[in-house]
Amino acid sequence: MSEQTRRVTLHQSLVRPLLIAGGERDAVFALWFLCIAAPILFSLWLVPVSLLVGGVGQSFLRSLAKKDPQSLGVIRRHWGQQPFYPAAATAYAPVKYKAPKEQTQSVASGGVLSLLAKILGKKG
Image (tube, rainbow, N blue to C red; front, side, top):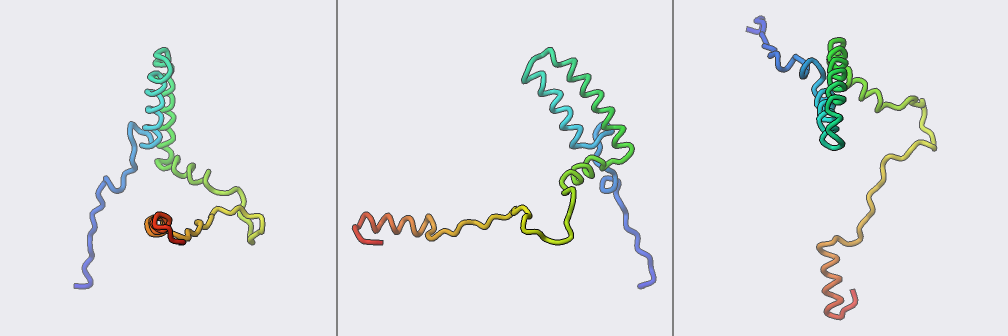
């Protein structure tokens, strides 16, 4: 029984990249959102300009996705990296974490109790 091979089906929806009209999904949505929003927000004379920009941008996104369907995701991750990672830690490294301030009293318990103490005339 342990000698039998096991077959696993790979559905196309799990393997195929997310493309819309031949371009990456996020980039196509962003491009056409801007091309539709520009004439609405600014002026209707931008309709032919936005259609031209949308068509050229769509063809660029299609050609980019033909070469690599995940190219914009790779570029986005690349831009998030630092240009140089030193081999050792330095004292001039930027501090990205700030510790939260300690609260002496919580709003629910301490604030209400001090308010009641002031009303009743007791020192709190």
